Length: 91
Image (cartoon, rainbow, N blue to C red; front, top):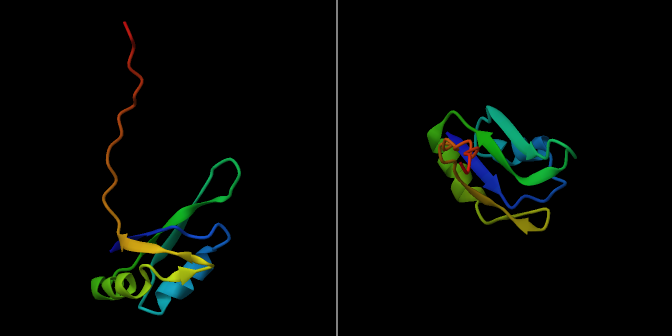
């Protein structure tokens, strides 16, 4: 199950997230989203856990808990929507 983790402090690392979620089960992958120009965290990440019951336990155990002084939000990630190119012409 792919989990969305939001409202993260900007200094959190992928290792921090792996440790926090690892307390609930096996973590397959952590993707901390960063700005492509500055490299700074955008304050959210995705955590992938292959066992759904462990992922559900992580959601229940970590959602709205404090991490680095901020209450994080954890829920099941929604599938990515196709975005239109938005490059239409006015003519």
